[in-house]
Length: 443
Image 1 (tube, helix red, strand yellow):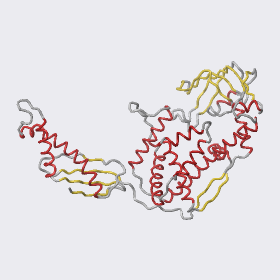
Image 2 (cartoon, helix red, strand yellow):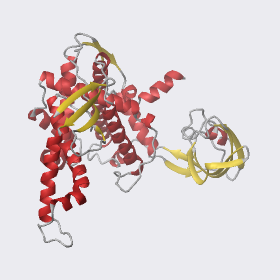
Image 3 (cartoon, helix red, strand yellow):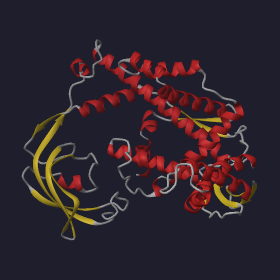
Image 4 (tube, helix red, strand yellow):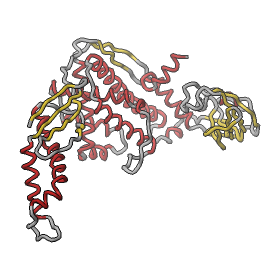
């Protein structure tokens, strides 16, 4: 067997593999002899069919089968001989196979990039610090009181923070548009749940009033066919309700199953939950910053095959989030635009290759003791910790998820140990609601 390698573009390689005619003919003959022993043909006894009849009827098909099988067996052998590691399944250019001639075919594929990890070596990495303060707990309790308002009908004009029940019909240039109308729709005035100008246009009106509100859809509105357009909504107010927050007392605390201790027990429980969530979020942010820095100084070509595969994974994830279940083979995945996932897919592939190489270079592992401690910590946040602890410890897939998380932490800690840390203090709200913080900065 003769094998040659050609470098095409970047990571793309082309193998040309030639199998000697003698080997092909030997295999074809063996299969034809085997057929002759088994095949039944009218006019001949089993096992007594002349070889020239077998050849005339079956040689072309057998030769094609041999070609397919030769590709399967020789491709792996050729890759091993040339020490090539494909990043995706090779594309084999179909070649015809002719009697008495060498069988030559080509296989095109991408290889995994070869690189040496560049360490951070005292480079600066930002590290977030944050803590839950009393005012954060107070604000959380206020949100809970807000969410548990009692709503009562009122006979007055609509004002901010009221809940209104409305019917509305939207039109653009006098024509209704899809999704532009609804009946018995609940809106809390000032919540920002509707497009700009809609809620403001309801303020000052009374129950049973019908009126028009003119608005402009934002230029970046999700439905492109509506973005930037002027619309008129005909609105009828069917009811107006005013919300009253419950008193912060033991009766309120009992709604949250805190047991004995009333308000103080509620505050303690809320603070512990907030601290757990904050720790998880800060840890994720810090790992992201560390890995971003590692990717910044380790740049190399990424196999398109791996990016394509990751995009498919992300599409399946999107399907699951939208439809609430895993994609089944008989269901067509919506034609999500590729650009929705491309950058995230590239990041995942880049980081995955770096991560794997870093673990190998430094011989890092997720040791059992740390895995067990992580399981115990996660289980402690649930009402029935023993059940969750048992699930993670007995189920290999669930345990593997924890091992992967622990290994991420181990890698991040190792990278940080070689960097110069620049600490940045953020409030609880800045960590947990970064989008809100960005919006406020833009105001």
